Length: 232
Image (cartoon, rainbow, N blue to C red; front, side):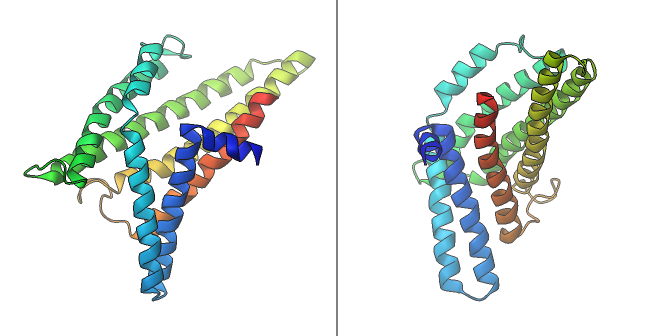
């Protein structure tokens, strides 16, 4: 109970809960629709939409934290190598382009802003979102590669090295799980692209709900697992 309340007290934790509710509701909507329970399917779909809107509303406040993070990150001097720092800087640039576009899409959806072709803004939003996830995926894969190289240099005989090896292996497993989660997120994000771009527009609501739910549940697991790992 204490861990859950602590999670709900933080923006990141709350977003993970809302995201999970959003996609599990979408999944249940698709399942009920296939079973012919149209009324129940509509209720789940409405709940999913409301959760998605909640996340979109909360993202309106992400600019300042993102600016602060980017200033602290700089050119990625603290990254293990130049490849990771380059990917990190590119990801930050794309994220800074994503947030204003996301706000324009929000304003269009809320009927606050009128534009001639709103689909163009949705497409641009999807491009930035997909690109950001892809770069994060590549960065995580690179990190796992570096961690494995580092693990080979640790002496397993000495006690201190054995403890260090155990911690490194635990962190590596966590990053491998991140690769799975980010891969699911990338598959989902790319499905929002226009038809003809990768697999854009080819996924059913059931597929999107399943992919999103699986990714969200993995994210919840990682949230608590990382907290336990930090205590050790």
